[in-house]
Length: 243
Image 1: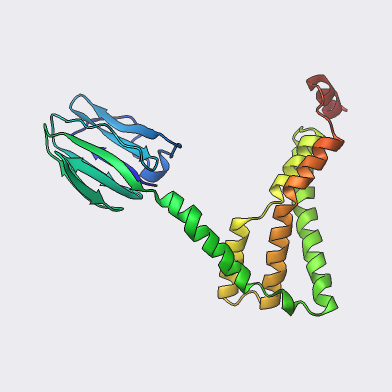
Image 2: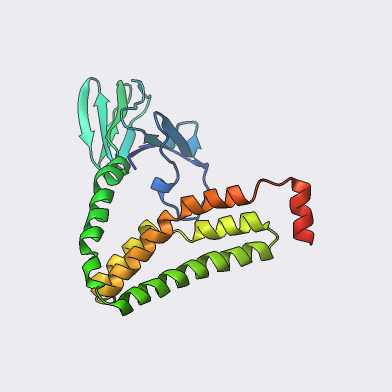
C-alpha cells in the first residue's frame, strides 16, 4: 500500500504496547479518499498512518515542529515550500518546521499488482497447463475423481459443519459452495509444487482444471440454491433447526 508515516515527538500511545504489528495492515485504502489512523498521540505531536488513493493528497499546511514522513507502500510525492520530492517504499524525509508542505500518492502498488502482475501470473499458469497431456482415458478418469473428491470434501464437510452448529440447510449449503472456491491461492500452491517437482505436468494440469472449475461453479450454484430455496422467515428457520 502507499502509506505515509508521520512521526514527530510522541508519548501517549493509541495502540496497545508490547504487541507487534505491521503498519501496512493498520490502515486500508478507500476509493477516492485519504484514510488516516493515529498510532500515538501527544500534545506535542502524533504518529499517524495515511493511506492515499491514487491522485489524493493532503492540502498544503505547516507544522510547528520538524516531522518525519516515511513511505510504507507505493510511490509518494512530498512538496516542501514548492519543491517536489518523490519518495519510494522505505524512503523518508524530514519536513522542516514552519514550512508549508503537502503529500500525495503518485503510484499505488496495490493497483500495479492487480492490473499488471496478477494477469501475468494467470497467463504464466495457463502456459504451464498442458491439457494435451491428458490424452489417455485413465487420466481423464483421474481428473474426474479429483474433481468429485474436491467438491464433495469441501461442500459436504462445510455444509455438515455449518448445520451442526445450527445454521439452516440453505445457509449451510451456501457456505459449503463458497468454501469450495479455490481461486488464486490454489494456483499459487500448485505452481510452487510444480517448481519443486512434487507435481508432474499431468497432475499439475488436472489440479489447475479442478481449481478453475470449482471456482467458476460458485456463482451458478449460489444462484441455483437461491432459486430452489426461497428466503424463509426467521420463525420458519428456527423451527427447522429445532426439528
